[in-house]
Image 1: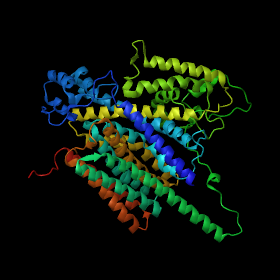
Image 2: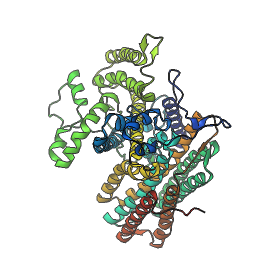
Image 3: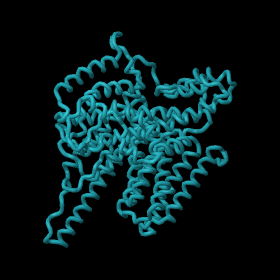
Image 4: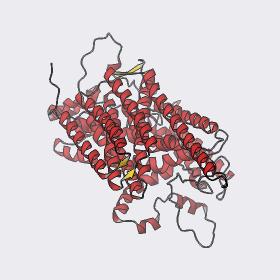
Length: 590
């Protein structure tokens, strides 16, 4: 057990350090790009003119809007591939502004789809494979419960965490991060938890529920205090990450004590029965949803050619499943197929549940070219990829040449039928590539939301608690509702709290830590968007306190009445938040 815990902490630290390095590289300008620190980070004591707010553009004449967008520093985005503000006010005529907003809204929905597909079918499977693979650096497979509260939770919360990291990278969009994290917390603990209770009333597990809700309340209190103080120091950011490590340790100890008590009680109650199965002998649960190639097996075995293997591996459509699914599923699949094809082409997936580990020789060799190419084209939105080395070749061309040479060596040194000994390294490559895909999509999401905030004169906080929180949480909500319908409401209810603890602690802690590492100051200044942030934090704290009090009073019996009360609470909160945003509810000035 101690060896598994040591393995867990070392591997989790490796992931945090890796993501920290990726975000630092993707958020730092190279020597060929101007500095990205705005005037709000200039040395103190220097007289500066007040920075114009980008939201003032809608109050200008039509002819002045485009020059204002191009010359105002507050309107400039530090990352992303498209300049959405310039597109709205410079390339679309004023009469077609509704069309531009509609196109942006559809593109935002598609970006949420990209985030969900990448996290579910590529990021999570590789993360699970890394946690179970055996190799020179990974000698112990992880099969105990911390798997669920670390790797799988991180995979499920990847869109939320990366969106928070991107939002924290720019002080102008930090409100999006707080709005999304708090908004998702209120949404999950009320709408999702209430929906589970309505679909299938059940008895909640008392000790895990109390443990998770208390830890989450502590995390919310830390964030509320940071907002009140107006800053997050280095020690405070490390405290967030330390609290999550302590949460994992608590889960490990609680699970170990529970299993020890259960094993002991069974031994004393049935002395003649054989000893219980060890952890490694428990029924394995498949952690990989990557099932594109699971077609009907032929009655007679035949050897597929290399071209057939490549064609089947790049096909995102399961024809057997297509014939049995509904029209709505098929329509959604049509939208997902281009994304899935692009991800299949660029992201390797290792599946330890399969005999061959999902080894596809021609496709995996192709990944040695496409995956590094994606890495250099997504770092700093492609700025590093087009940089010319010595004025001769761009970085992307060097990467393609080196990847082609490595792919050729791998192709001639391996076979189609048997995976190579170092096949597990593709899990790390797939993990890194899918993480950068998610980071790139999250950057575009944040930029679009900021553009919509400028067009409609909305604060970043309200956009975070509504659009960003809904988009990132809708996948988890459907998954939890499906689990409840299938007869596992307790599992779905536990997932409501376990995932949002990770999102809040790692999202705020790692996001502020990255901002501190890029800033000469040893702290991150927080400027809440008026009363709305306090309404949001208060609503989240009130919902947690109500659940902490009401659930034990019900003897942990969650009925449909409890579920409808949670839905009523969320509706009331949303109404108060919107009224606060539009100035109907406001504090009287003293």
